[in-house]
Image 1 (cartoon, rainbow, N blue to C red):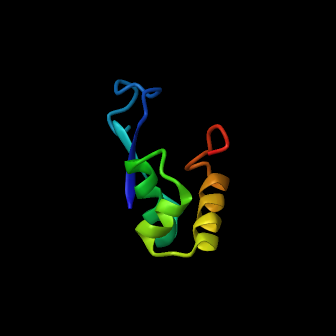
Image 2 (cartoon, rainbow, N blue to C red):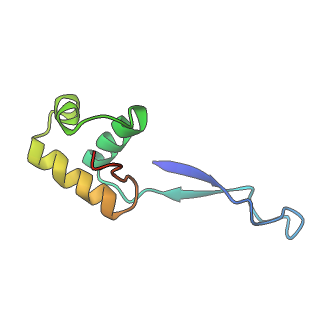
Length: 80
């Protein structure tokens, strides 16, 4: 999966070879990507809802959430 990031710090006039957008890859497993997509669709989703949506165990969902937090893809707000 690729994600586009706008690089606003680079001027197009510096070099014609500087891309307007930079394409990077996510360092995610398919399980992490499934959880990340559901969190993106519903940022206030609960862990139990992720269990139901993904078919994974609560322990697996917690492990995936911790991994995504460690990679700074998601963060918990107000302990939720």
